[in-house]
Image (cartoon, rainbow, N blue to C red; front, side, top):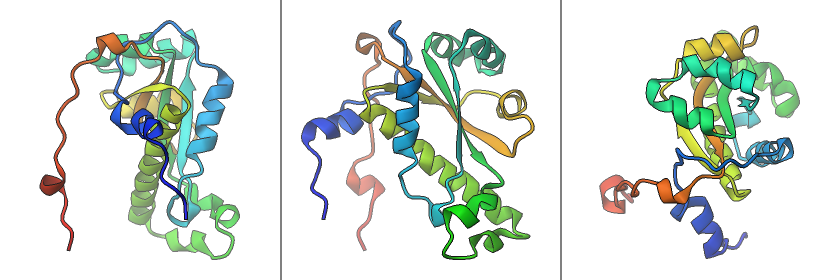
Length: 196
């Protein structure tokens, strides 16, 4: 049985971690981005379907391509972030199941079931995107996950010719703590949970 991680790790992943909108002028290496993905991919998904697909928007040209697709309130923080991850999911994830889940004919579960395909891709892609945020935080990066963009435009501009669909964006880098807003409230246990 695994032991609890130490308090400083819990603080880094959850209690002290915040959603950042202001960024230091500090680069994020390609190697670090690879490490983030290599950690995130290890989280569980149903039938190991692993639908997460990521494009790291890092170059000036890629940022300019993304800029007109952003809601007005997200432009400045995204353009100033060292990297923006487009977190999406593959709507044809089931084609990879013979390799990813070889001990069952999992691909056949999705034949003729577009609703099951969509639900499974979105659910597990979102789950993996959450792992992605925790992986980034665990490696010392700050995150700024957000909606507020033109999904169809992003799909056409960045995922053209693929079966991938965008879910949400996540700015990555090293935030400026002094510019954080006060933390918003959360529900307490009794407001959100039941033990039956």
